[in-house]
Amino acid sequence: MADVMGLAISTVQKIWRAHGLAPHRLRIFKLSRDPQFAAKVHDVVGLYVDPPAHSLVLSVDEKSQIQALDRTQPGLPMKRGRAGTMTHDYIRNGTTTLFAALNLLDGSIIGQCMQRHRHQEFLRFLNRLERDIPAGPLIHVILDNYGSHKHPKVRAWLARHPRWTFHFTPTSASWLNAVEGFFAKLTRRRLKRGVFHSLVDLQAANNRYLAEHNYGPKPFTWTADPDRIIAAAGRGYQVLDSSH
Image (cartoon, rainbow, N blue to C red; front, side, top):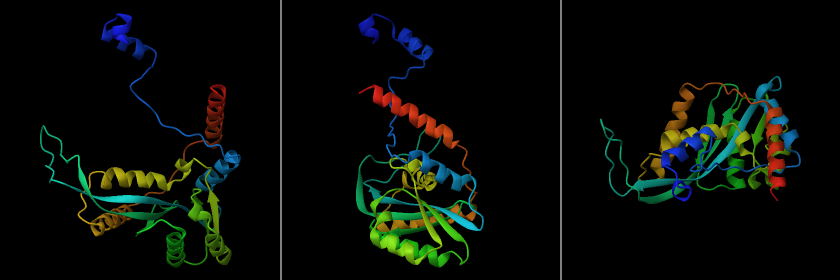
């Protein structure tokens, strides 16, 4: 731009800063087109801020296709004046899927690694939750719209377990599911820089991170106003519709 306009680079940068422009950056987004968007937002956020009495609220999802990546050469540790190093290439040693349920009351996680990501594995995880959670409280589960969560056999399981109720986030709004925050921390703090020589190493690392998290969990707190979320989505719809 400086070359085309015949200006100094610093002048162009000052103009960009003055107008809050950052053309070198790009933000990714996806607006939900769910016709029940507002109702589902109020339903899910209502569980976060005012859960039903004598009930347990779980945020459940799967982190699929976690790769066991081994580096082709050993990295060097961090030292003064030099960041830690890691080779750009890697060897794939298989993948695993982490099923996780976040207890919103105390922030603890129940998790289990499985080889695949189908309704069969989801049912196994539900059975594990039913076994581990004491009898008595009603259980409200927040889920996204992945097909395995709505499979006929999963619906049949729900019919046999009347204390369980599923609440689905709007389509293209998985960010509304609280457990996604835990997955982001897992990726950033454990997986991103990890070196895993086998699938067993990867699963063991996931299990250690779960144990460390549960050693001192913190209750989940939701702060975003659902009406502001819905209003922001409405403005997004108007901008998208006006551009076509």
